[in-house]
Length: 236
Image 1: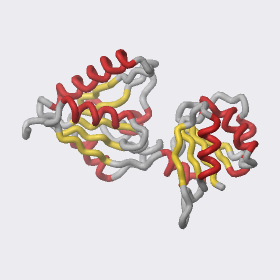
Image 2: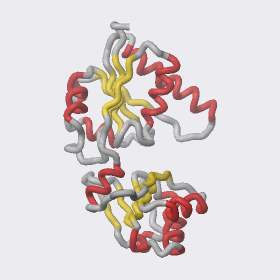
Image 3: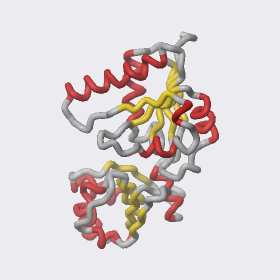
Image 4: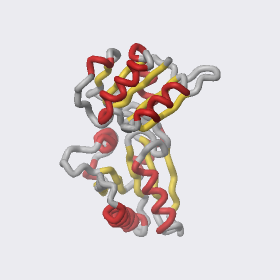
């Protein structure tokens, strides 16, 4: 076991390269292998772009991992097993692998499934997680908006086209952060109108990064097509 490398899940924060921890910085420097989510389009992954502010890719073994955007179980299982084995090849050589992920590794992250599969298929591998600042926290700081105070209840909800569930989340909580909201933005704006909460909402894309966009008048976004990394925060 002592000859097996450690797998690190490293939270790289919401976008601003300065929003990583000292520990994340140290492990990036020390790890010989950097694994990162690779986009099929050829564009650079968000987490990789942040990590390259701190490392020289020429000094590391850079391992791009493609995660299929499909719900087909057979395709997912095949690709995921291939991905885990790719990472394990480096671990069995005694090399530590730092898997970088945007936000926090334990909050709606690709790393969660990676961790589960490695634990199942290669229980001898030690896994360590370095927390990161999520886009939720980044948005609260950027907007100067307390997510919860006193006995307030806050919810983090993946936005879906289930209008009843989205409405229920808004009714039952003092603050709701809807992540991945771009694909159902028009529906969400309609629900906000129904509940008279339009003026309590804001939409943010790529928070804290150089590409950040903020909208406090969400009605102007009806019909708009926004980036995948977009969230909506509603604070009553």
